Image (cartoon, rainbow, N blue to C red):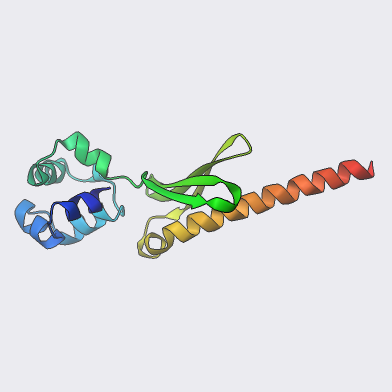
Length: 143
């Protein structure tokens, strides 16, 4: 993740802003996944990659939340939280099906609660699926 990489380089966003000429607010939005790097000006991407001394492709790979995993130990389910098209999504596997749920737009409020929203969405999906399954079994038993 870009934010973690910058932290590992012992750089602050203010330092990086001065070094690259990219406005602090733009850098902040980039590292917090409020804007995707591929939607930024090409010059910004080039300047940021140069300041971090990494190829632009590596920079693009760092601008993702795909390494954010959430464990659901009660159901042995691992979910992946990520950003796609300016929206948070959670994907997981349940009953041999790949599930992808859109959680909402990336903004200040959803960024703060993204992991909790993902957990709630997965738990809600599982509860509803189990309810439908019990209902179907009950319906079959009455026939």
